[in-house]
Image (tube, rainbow, N blue to C red; front, side, top):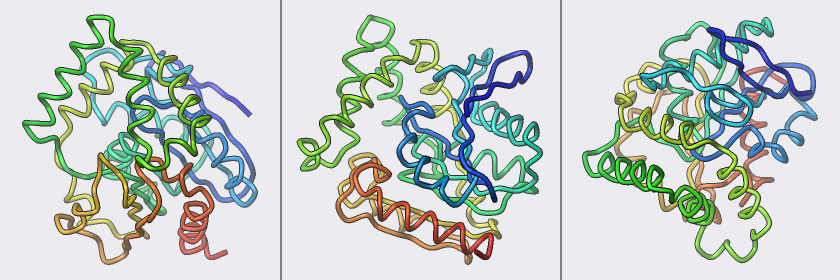
Length: 266
């Protein structure tokens, strides 16, 4: 079921599937809630799954400047508050993981569990910020479609590309559906986000970190830099790049279901 609410007079679009204890799926960069569609359908057999279009993505309207992770997190809170959900598990993919950490910092009372899915708690390096500014300039000069096409392929493990042509094309179409303003807002928020490794260090609920062995964006070397909470664990998807929910869907579902059982005792 697709639903909308208004937060600060701006429309937030989201989907709810299934019944029971809740799990929130937060999409990544150049993605929308549609990115989770196949994954959420299977997960909803056991849980109530909420997939949210972040502001400026899908059918959700964009916040005014400045663009911050806290504003994106506020849209998650608005949906959960409207649905009368007091605690939930948050699953954040890539950029969505940055939002999930901001949510954990600002709304700790709503935390039942957290999963970072191909994501990082760290702020951007100077080099990364430079790349993001270059991407913004490319978008402003009419190269949005090229960026979307290249990104939709780069998020897959190099040797998985031929096996996921349909999924890559779907990702490209989703990316192209996002406005230039929405994409630029997300880039600025990533570029300006603060380091939230301390959120992990202080996290007291069950925590899961999923990485892909073939990921070209978030490599497994990040493990050595983290303040992983005592309640947390790492999982490596051996045959995945940056899209484990697609590249190794069944294993990813199993990991998320295990987290849900740990949290909800089912």
